[in-house]
Amino acid sequence: MADTSTSTPSGEQDANGDRAAPSQPPAQPEKSLEEAVSELSKFPIFMKNVPENIEDNPHLLALQNLVYDGETPESLATYHKNEGNKFFKKGPNFYTKAIEQYTLGIEQKSTDKPVNSLLYANRAAVQMVKHNYGHVVNDCTKAIEHDPTNIKAYWRAAKASYELEKWEQGYQFVVDGLTQQPSNAELIALQKLLEPKLAAKRAQEAQKQQEEETMRQYRKALQIALDLRAVVMGENIYQLSAIYEGSIYVDENRKLHWPVMLLYPEYSQSDFLRDVNETETLGSHLENMFGPTAERAEWDTENKYKVEHLIIYAETNACRPKEPAKVRGKTGFDKVKRAVEVPLDMPLAKALRVPGYIVPGVPVFHVMVRGSGCHTLFLKQYE
Image (cartoon, rainbow, N blue to C red; front, side):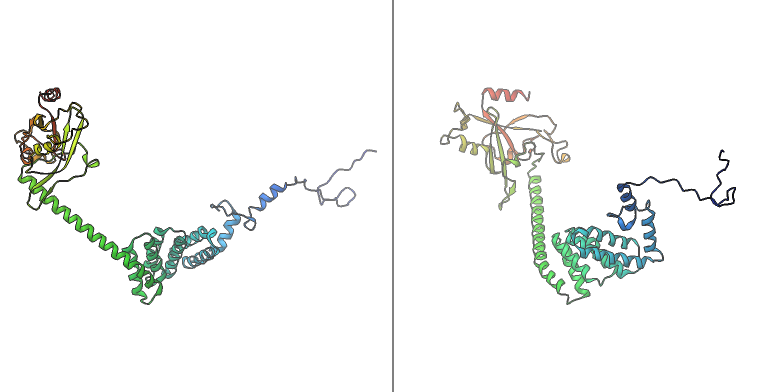
């Protein structure tokens, strides 16, 4: 005979009046070990590292609410200060965490100034052992602003300034700290280290100022001497300072001395006369170099450079004047380059006053053998 019974919902009676057994929920697939560990790692107690953004983790948010619920900026600032201290005491591997906690405390904007001062000063202490001396000074300055009696802040700021070789800044922190606590041994010891450094720096600065003043006076006297002689200075077009030593100066007899460059275009050679008195002639120097008793220059293979055969030229308008207004409208200063002969017996002072001659940093003159092929080509370029 066929079974005519029907199934009934859980908890309902069947046709015979008996209660049917409840049906079982569908079986859930078993999780792998990796999935189980992944699920557990979402709970704070099983976390190896706390994520930077906790907003996506309800468990961490709940913990944070427990910490912050009912707290004031002042209590939270103190809490983060204490947490930072714990991390700092744990050693170098936790310095970053300590800085983070002190920073969180500062960000509470507490009205408790002594606590704020400690937050800045303690963060500076961590930065000190990390050798971030600039950060130390900045944080200690803030610490002192919040609490001028924070002696450790003065000492750390002074010590960091010492390491930065900012002697004056460090010394001022020491002085300010001793104003608060005159007998502080650490500040006194640091003061003794800073005093000789500061004295040496001030002596160096005084010497530098004296040298600068001497240079100003020298330049002033030199400019007056140049103006009196109507010498026109121009740009340094030969860049001789990198190769030769020499400078313009006024001696005790108020005579100008010049370094002078002699160019020999035929052989692309040159001579540098380090010190020529303005009363001397170029011919007298050529006599020393190419006179009867002088040795032949190595480059003078034909032995034709004899003082009696030489001719000297100054090139006018070879460079721009440093002060164009001083030569505007004057004879010869028309931007046209010319070769002007300088007699061998002409004093240097007079040679520098050739109309249109602008000293290109140092006086430069061209020397060649009179009537030579080089002489002809040299003049031709100025036609």
